Amino acid sequence: MSKKISIDPFTRIEGHLAVSLEVEGNRVKDAKCSGEMFRGFEQILKGRSPLDAQQITQRICGVCPVSQGIASVLAQEQAYGIQPTENGKLIRDIMLASNYIQSHVTHFYHLSALDFVDITGILNYSGKDKFLQGIKAWVQQEINSNSLFPAAPFLPRYEGRYIQDPEVNITALRNYFTALDIRALAHQLIAIFAGKMPHMATVVPGGLTEKVTNKKIAQCRSKLDQLKTFLQKEYTGDVLAVAGEFPELLSTGRGCNNYLTFDVFNDSINGGAPLFAEGVLIDGESQKLDLNLITEEVKYSKYTSDSGFSKTTPEPNKHGAYSWIKAPRYNGHPMEVGPLARIMVGYTNGNKQVQAVTDTFLNKTGLDLHNLDSCLGRHVARILELQILVEHCERWIDMLDPRQPSAIDFHITSSAEGIGLTEAPRGALGHWMEIRNSKISTYECIVPTTWNCSPKDDNGVPGPVEQSLIGTSVADAKNPLEAARIVRAFDPCLACAVH
Ligand code: NFE
Image (tube, rainbow, N blue to C red; front, side):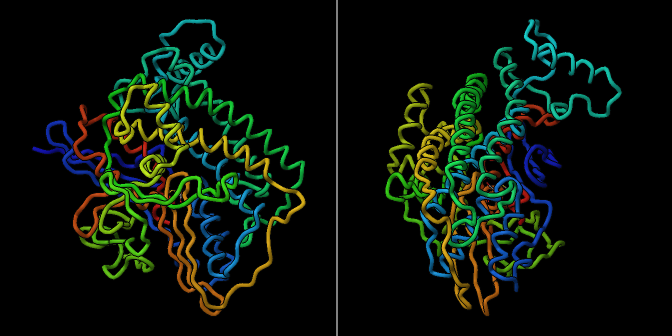
């Protein structure tokens, strides 16, 4: 007899996700990821000036607005037949790198780490450490209080095995708080050129409206230095310590084993080649990316059956549909996108930098590449890519030139099409835009979490997160901690997914 487990709402992710599991014995037999709301950004954009797009699409999300804005101006630059200035490219890359840092740090410390740190366990620790004494006093006071949710956001939680080494536990908890300042710092770095964050005010087709000055260069350097220290010492150390405590999570949560990436970051040090290049891996085999093979299927999505790529008509009560997320597929295959995809595609396709950081990690831990296709492997992929990114970002800052412009003039073409492809922190992001009579006639976004959290497709094949859950064992149906850890490792953003 199978039983149902419902995780609804699925907390500590961005947006509204529900996960339902059908479990037989202790094994997950079927899994459903449901996006729980519809937003309609593509409809909002119809009939507007194309120049509104980079501002409106940034509002899809407060976590990855840099990528949304960049995808939108890339689509417009293709439509207008222009190229951004060198300063413009560098600034966008610096801002995007800082957004990756902000997003990954938030994901690990403030969303996922609460599945690992043991907030109540610290009550058993003794020691004179001021932080330990302070947090013990707070937890005790909370537990003794009449509060409806004592020690939130750490409690309530699913019960299970949490970190056992006191040193690892205290360090991760301490860094939970430090990471709040790190997030602010990463946002401040972006705001040097964006004017504000979230939602950059200055990004335009052709570059950015903010000029490069020596003062801004110095500010960027100083902030990046502080971020780098935290990433190298604390973030990397905490992820490796968690991996040491939960080695079994390096072999659970195996995904669909198909990966997709788009080009991202002009490696200006290297003549402008993408730092992470586009690629497709199907079951380990590398293929050339062909955008014509991307489809969006809706059999299990709450849209009319003639909806799909560039057509989105809601049908809230559609029979059999269980999600507001469409099901993007590549040549019929579900594809995982995100940091793990960037590492897998880069490693397989001979990206020297990706191979170097990955091999160093694998040699140090004695693991194989296939261990990265796992719950904890997805966390490891984030620290690996940030190592590459921080080093490059330092050099991009050095290459900014105050004597050169940040943007060029352009004219809106009255009738044109443009595609803007980039990689958001959570993976491959595409904006497709058609302009008629100088207004947007269609706008289509395919967003990372739309790929990862997609429902079953027209052939009944589950999406990547669903596949990573199927086959997992859940020991206690009331505390499905194993499933929660696997889903959170993907860093889902439902706000983006249902745009
Ligand atoms: Ni709302 Fe986003 C990222 C994009 S995820 S966070 O990263 O694009 O779907």
